[in-house]
Length: 143
Image (cartoon, rainbow, N blue to C red; front, side):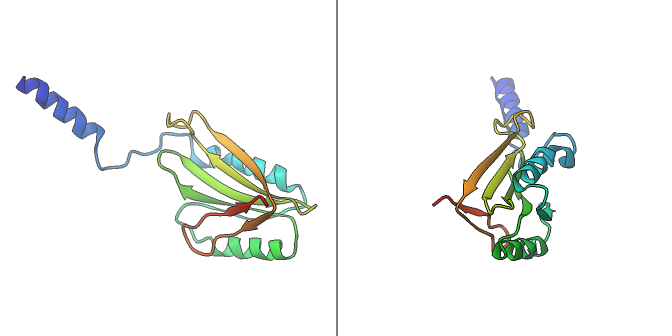
């Protein structure tokens, strides 16, 4: 019985380690390409790329660009990475030449099985609220 309890304890300690496990995916650049392609497709060829901002990187320049383009009703795209629980997560905004705004999200694995179930989602928006502070996310208003 002692052996069984010891084995169970060791298994629990290994599985419940406080150290985060690294995401076991192909390179992050390869993983985000479907997101980047979808943003570019939705925004159109005339769109200005305001930037793709990786996790823990200053997004102020890209957001300033996006605000200017949004105010001028010009086509643009922007993407920002956020911390996912077990996957790479990106959010972005695309505005096309007709003024249509879209909120685009990417999750490298929606099922928690290590980068095997990626999903890109596009939602059309009536208006967009861009983040003001680090850690805030885009807000897509549909009405």
